[in-house]
Length: 424
Ligand code: HEM
Image 1 (cartoon, rainbow, N blue to C red):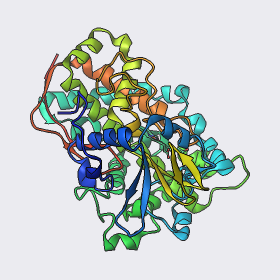
Image 2: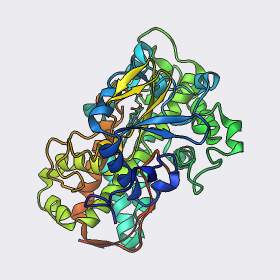
Image 3: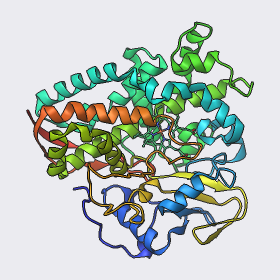
């Protein structure tokens, strides 16, 4: 099961961060990260295309440094590993791949909707939804925790924020899975890196499902335009960004799509990994159940432990230095947040899952740079409510088969988590 002790050392020449198959057992990736942090913390990782590669940044301090310096480490040349040429960058660019004043103006459009106070208004809805989901699953006794509990509720909340009618939520979930799952044959319409994926170079994640999301978003936008609603779509179509430049149709498409995908799988995986951790650490589960006041701190440990996003990428805008390495202008610099979350220089005994851990300076949301996760307060609320509702309902829980991991070096996800739960 999930690592609760430091993983076995791995020789440096066995490290390959580009091979998605190295991210399917919940173990090998942590061994690679440990080796890199120890032996080559800013490591040149070659990629398949001749001459192509990236700097893999694996220590907490270096990740934070690069993340906070967007002038030197820009997001505008894209944030995933894929090489996106100039033309397709323009059609694919969202908030996530915008820097500077335009980024601030775009982010401000929705910032107020994601503050702790704003998301707290969804708590009652969320608690009801979570309770119903749990009751239905627990009645079965044996079930797949990912499918029955974790997979759908994040999108239900987002759908509500976006103003998407409840009966369409299912479609959003499927689109989200297909778009982000483009390295996993179980989800993909088109696998990234195949000849067919070349046809979709102008779409986010090169996913044809993006076209369906765009069409759906535009329909929604047309209905919200000028209608005075206060949901996220209404704000995007009816408010002028603070720099006075309206969102183009494609800006809207990509913003809408980002909102659909960003909070979906990430939150799902945080919840599933947390369940797995609580199965593997019954004493931590008991501690939390006996003292619910530990929950806010425990949520930070859930986030550190689960690390649902392995990395995001930056690109050097000039020749520079990072962690003692010379980085040349134009080179890709990949921030491995998950690795930073196990950095022994920052976390005491990083492979101990400890719900009472304090000073938990995790990188799960990308730390305090300009692209710090917009949905972090929402994700925290979702995790807290889920486990506040789950723990009192549960008397015992065990795995009925080994969990399966998503085949991806980008999201750190569980595809299945077969459990048997005895209700309290
Ligand atoms: C950005 C992780 C939940 C929306 C980010 C980034 C990370 C992240 C690491 C930074 C990207 C970068 O540095 O380039 C997570 C995790 C989540 C989560 C682990 C769940 C546990 C959510 C939710 C939403 C959301 C619920 C709601 C819509 C966004 C958006 C951005 C973002 C819009 C882009 C912000 C910007 O570029 O200014 N997220 N996220 N996320 N996240 Fe999340």
